[in-house]
Image 1 (cartoon, rainbow, N blue to C red):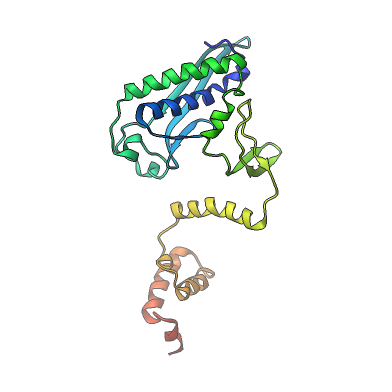
Image 2: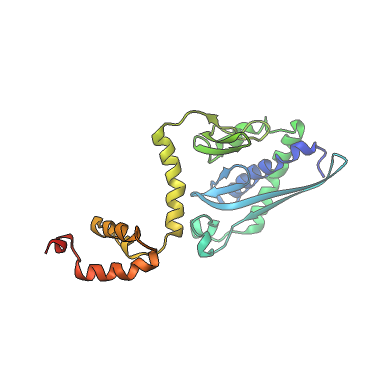
Amino acid sequence: RPEISPVSASMLTLVMALAAQKGIKEATGIESQIKWPNDLVLNKKKICGILTEMGTEFMEIKYVVIGTGINVNQEEFPEELRKTATSLYLETGKKYHRSRIIERILEALEEYYGIFVKTEDMSVLLEEYNEKLVNRGQEVCVLDPKGEYRGLCQGITKTGGLPPEERELSGKERLLLASGPLLSWYRREKRDLPWRENRDPYRIWISEIMLQQTRVEAVKPYFFRFFEHFPRISDLAA
């Protein structure tokens, strides 16, 4: 039941991220990074998530609950999470005492919380937080009410925001930024189609001609029959 302004309470998520990062390092020696605003990552995969819930009454905080989940000794994840989530065990091959990790995190939280409540902002913790910020120095996307834009992340402000250094991107940079998510989606969602088995220009050319005429499912049998008779482009001239 912190005696701080409700406006400042959202920054407790950042304070907890600092504490979790430090506690894990002290208990295990593992150096994770903070992914603003509420995750810890290790080798680009999530190992910790933080969710803060607050209840207020007449502009006073009645309670704050900081839920913190850490992947400690998990030996496997569902297939859909394996590319984005990991555990301390999977990264090191070692099992860890969860109670020891919790103890170190709570000690760190007491330290950081004591600093935070004096100013009710991140001004004193700013430098340490930004040193551990995985987003720092990277292009980030900002969903602003005035319109989406991209910029270079320089770190959080004392109020916990993450405003990037906005700049005009070149055409090549815009293409590269757009291609990453697009290709990731394609690799994840692509259908198993016969003309995608390799990059043979002949197969791709024939598939494009056929697909202009009708649906994918209708093309498949014709595609197979065509290549039974004309497996190479030279066969077309025979």
